[in-house]
Length: 568
Image 1 (cartoon, rainbow, N blue to C red):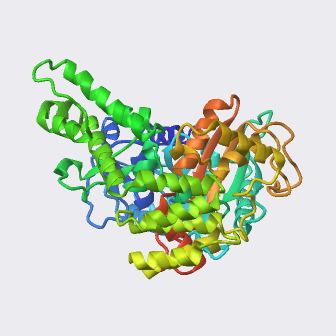
Image 2: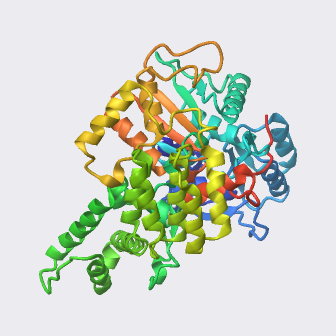
Image 3: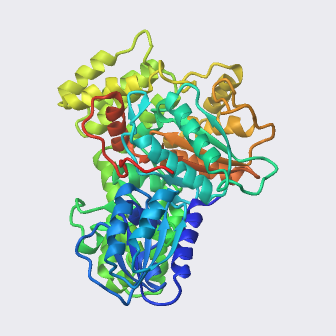
């Protein structure tokens, strides 16, 4: 179960089907992202694709010597653009691939427009999602709910995205959903409808244990997306923002021109692939080792590499090293910037208190630590606000809660009213009243004992005590203990065996911390394969936007793909 491989195979097939000769790849805004996340431009150039164009671009030249490979979402707009294209074709022949199911009436409209008979092929290739990591996918959709209900135009798009993942992985699953979330139930029913309607597409070889689709709601765990992160991929997204594997570094002090935007892709960056899930300390050591290896080949003027700034100086002094290892100069820059932000915003102290709030239940220590950090002028506005949010979620019903005085403290610190209001909104979004699961207080004896022993052993890393709620949910699911009363099956049948292939989807967005949990479960649970998806991949900033939009205090909905879509 590898979503990256599934999308790569679809794209390779499209390009190979068109045969030898020069080609243009014609895409829309969304399929451009889908392709660019799994293939670099240079890799596609090697397959004789010399031009990349957008179907909605008005000023494309006539190039009759090129074959056109069209990879498009089956939206009304795209079908309309194609009809116009086929009436006045700019290329010699067209191979048309839709990323999802297209209706017969639209195929007919395309056939009627093809008077010059330039269309060689029309196919459905189900790559209608962003394959972020082999076990992680996103639909790049934000602002998916209004209150506790679906934003009407978004449900069909999420249904399409998720059914395309099932088709790409060749799975016809049983479905379980989170009972406390009406949105989960609606999506489960919507997926089931498509599976029933398109039963021929879902007619895969039966496996002994059927695959399982588990649909969850972000509001059940509002703590995970609020925490600072310390593993490479998660930390980059939290502090710098990863958008379709790209990071914007243009705001970094003294950044060189060629590093203003960098791409971090595990598919073609070995260092990134090896360090994706390692913690910040280990990454610094690994970069240092990499550079020292190079220095061994350069015995002259050997210099010590003690700090990040030494490493940056080293890279600048060796233009040929820069050439040989664009990769390393990129990572030194990224890690250098992470390091600058960690010390500037005192994130180690902040993170330690966040972890205490998320994992422990000593109220008097927590309130002192939060207050101490709020009074520290170096703690940034967003970090101050997230600490109070975590406190509010953790001690929501505590008899001696000091939330009003913490809000006053934020006011004194000069935190904007909008940010202060967000604290109440986050509790409305993911507070005790809403949650279907026991996010915070372990109630049964086993959980209390487990927590007690964890406390005794001490945690080897104070910055990594927290486990997302997803870890427990999946652990229970794999052991066959996930309660039907909280996560019912859709329909009469249920799974009697331990599940093997599990696709988990989080409405309202997943996080890289949850992706790490899934990666570790895949490594340590033999015979179990898990893929995680979400309507988007959040960091704190995007999560707070999502919450504001959901609870109704936000502005316009953002994010790609909010079109009303045609259905078959």
